[in-house]
Image (cartoon, rainbow, N blue to C red; front, top):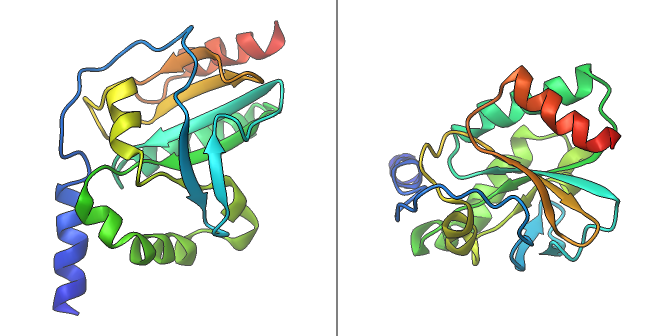
Length: 173
């Protein structure tokens, strides 16, 4: 039990081992990375996403889940129809070593019906964090992709109604 607590504590501390300045990636193509959903299927991002619009809610620390949940609730309450994927993105060797334990912990807290929509990125985690920046790592990175992986909208300042409305305006156009 002590070892488990030590591992979890170290994961929380090392969630963002290298700091990268935040970037505005709107208008760029999302970098090609690979992850695994909670059903243990390998997913290549952004090639996997074929819908006109796909929303990625990228989190760099466990505390990002609070921000991600606010986005998910707001999208549901506004009846925003879009494919949404949660992308926990963890950099560093230590988390990779304990990826099975981390994923099993997520499976315990997430209903099985939602497992396909949670894609954890370990191997390419540092590349994603460098691409978007990881300042204020508790904030989710909200990334709206088109069918070609082009980033139409990007937001990394925490949930706000104004940001939600701006995102929804892209979906209507």
